Length: 405
Image 1 (cartoon, rainbow, N blue to C red):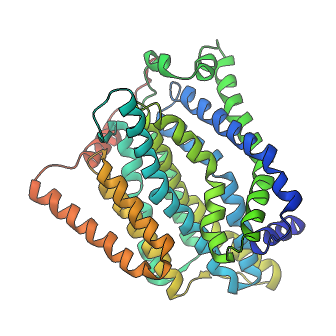
Image 2: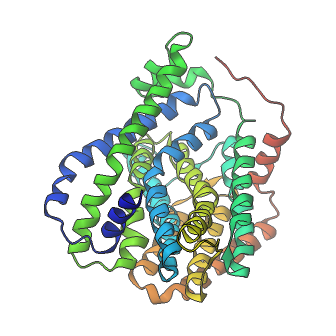
């Protein structure tokens, strides 16, 4: 374990020997693509056995394995050396902001581009289905609880337990949504159709094989893929903080972006692509965040004999606040179950500003907060009931449906 951690730390720190390592991209990049295809096919087949939201939650788990590995290594080292704690926050917030600021807009513009090629009107909104309200409202509890964490400027094992319970509650609500109607199977890729059309026990086995095969390939490929890409980035003179906050999360989220691109380009599956990202956001705000104090505390105990809470300073507090406001804006934007070209453009521009001009984080935070207020006031003035809470409540109160098989 210690050797593995040392290897990761060298990778995330200096990673100066890029020559032979960079050559690994010749096989790791295609392997990552294949793994993304396999788990995406598995999710499309699984949505006819379980709810689409639960299938996407499984998919998000598999896709974020590299991200969890990187975050665990950074938190472990921070437990030994608290001066490195800021890197754990940087990786967490960078991963979340990348999905929202880059991933969500990418989905919209891929959807709009391919929709236009098919003869659709220019720049239509992505319209979510009622079942997607669970993912949208699922963002609310962890964001509210993180407000408490920001206020006390620390996260401990109790916070970790609360965040994990919130994620379990989210999964339980997803169970209440029925599977998709099998008549929609004709729109799925052939691999997904093949898996679902197996008889008896072979059907879940085939779907599990797609998930399992993609997950295994992702597991064995993730480390050399990250190693090759980060080594090259380090030799280009990219700072350690930027490497940890932006480059590492971008690479570890690569499978998510591939599956989202594949669904967005099919136009009709753009809502599924967007919910893939939202499901990952919920995963990050709960399970990934919960892992930090647990790994940090255990590492500190392992090296000093005492357990320690994870504390963060004013600068890291600003990073988390900025990320909270960005996610809060994403939540409000989706509150009426639509995602428009203006939403996508503004999210991307604000993310780009904070990426290119880091010292403007406070100004960008204010912009996020102001936009949230404007949208909320607009909802009140228009006097229309928000669709996401309405559909979420219907899901919670409905009787469990078995779906069509």
